[in-house]
Image (cartoon, rainbow, N blue to C red):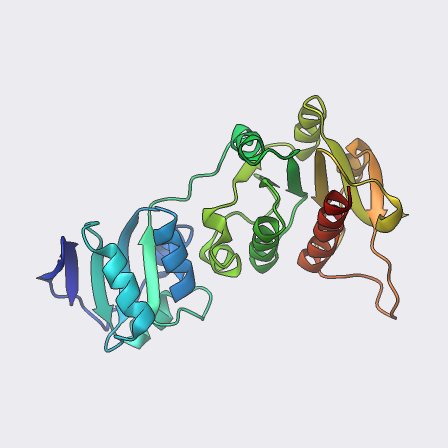
Amino acid sequence: MAYEIFGNDITEIKAEPTKAPVTSTEETEQSCNRLEGRNSVLEAIKAGRTIDKVYIQDGLRDGSITTILSKLKGTGTVVSFVKKQRLDQMSETGHHQGVIAQTTAYEYAEIEDIFALAKKKGEPPFIIILDEIEDPHNLGAIIRTANICGAHGVIIPKHRATGITSTVVRASAGAINFTPVVKVTNISNTIEELKLRGLWFACADMDGEVMYKCNLTGAIGLVIGNEGSGVSRLVKEKCDYVVSIPMMGQIESLNASVAAGVLAYEIVRQRYSK
């Protein structure tokens, strides 16, 4: 059944079919605007994102579901109670937790939004730049790390990289609603432009100087490369210095999102120390 929330009432507006599968075309079109999981939906609501429609597994009425319904009162959001099979068919992540929301299209931020956030916090800009990250789980995890460590924004390329999908949203654990994500045409040119605004750039590479020996204070951009090939040559050449994470084991590299977290918190440590 489908409902619309008006004021304090949830009113049935139409019957909702529960057995019809979601076509691949529909799923592709809706993927970028879909939130899966209770926390992702709640964080989006708290952040003020417009929720067009919410699908909830029929029979679920526990605390977090009640909270979602309560927060959607008066918003005009359509709520559909459907069978778990329908949610499974719609899900991209496989972890919908009984809730999938359809939102308005994700609006990428502008670089000025990053600088505005840094100014609002009274801090030198701290930006994480991603060079062709392809795994949406990595992108989501890095956005989450960026938010927690106080970075003012994340910059990603328009081409040869993942954009914001429902998997990214879920992996970010709600951070996508609070951390500006900017999509640019050319990472190298963007670095050059940001240098003119006072930023220095540290590129992550296993052959670089150990991070503890590098000055990572002040206005800084941290560049993280592709999961397999790392930071591209052209982007690396634009960076002011190359930094590495000490490796003590037999494996010579870290997952991109883990590496981003380690280096980001070295920046945090140096900022606190200063």
